Length: 450
Image (cartoon, rainbow, N blue to C red):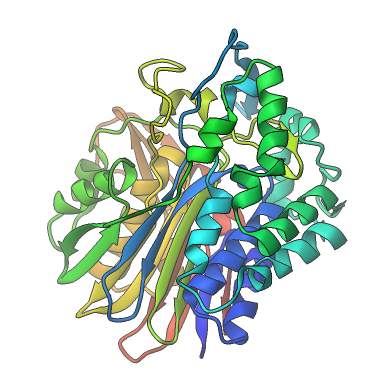
């Protein structure tokens, strides 16, 4: 076996698997998959998105690449355009999102992909190849992506997505050209070149904050991961200024060995700063046969509905839960908070498990429950992902079928497993050296073992 990958779309996973077959390592596979996800999951991520990548080289200290969104506004002049509110209906509930030119933060995807490629074996032009093909030739919209599109239909139309229904062929020629530029020229066009100029001229002329100075100053930052011990293993995850990894480590530290349902509920009660939003994120986990692991989570927020030169821009400045002190309270250059928590579990320097999740405020709870299922309950990765989940929001417990809450808290019982509980993608290496994965079918995840 050369490796295994779990991702949020079959074509995303296949792009990473192709890199493994060609002799690439886990980072090559993760970058190729991440760029393909910009094509196959266009409302969840994109070249105008942001994220984090945890890299755990075999036998070496893990590193975290932070290519998160940065608050704009350097050198801004003139009046700021108001945010544009849109209401999104989720069955019996609805949420208000804020989009438009003033919602756009400085993006990190191109810089993150270019920086991550240095940890792999393949050149960037090879890493974008599968993504370019799918963007230029098109791919069929699957069930989950059609559902996401139906929820965010005004943004999909505004971003000029040409296929909205399941089975329709989605062709994205501008995105194909932008990806080719990334492969040929690296990140430079997106931050100091013509693409950056096109983006900032359009945003600035319509009252948005994003300036050329913001993009020129952007960089993907290497950080030391957070570390916590659990069940004799070393767990490495996303450090501050992101919030997700710190929350996950607090939850883990609150757990005894072999935790009961009540123990899990108490751990899930760790204070959170995010609301229960859709969680327009996607996650990829890769582990290669040499033992190198890569875990990457990316997000476009809900998306701004603005696509320029193939770059679908984020709406991070319009996400309420990223601005708890009010919209535009972040100073220019501030990294925006995030619950994303790409994670790897090692034992005596050997990676046993690599995972992460989509799902906004449910990210850490989903990761926690999968970790407990694997490390404390001995479940294989797929069983650990498929097992029913809980989520505690304030004093209200949400549960999937199969959980009988041992709690006096108010309970919402879901009739089936639901995307509300995240999208956790997992790869593990067993003691015998077998690689296997767990794909979250709540979000149409896929696993490929090569």
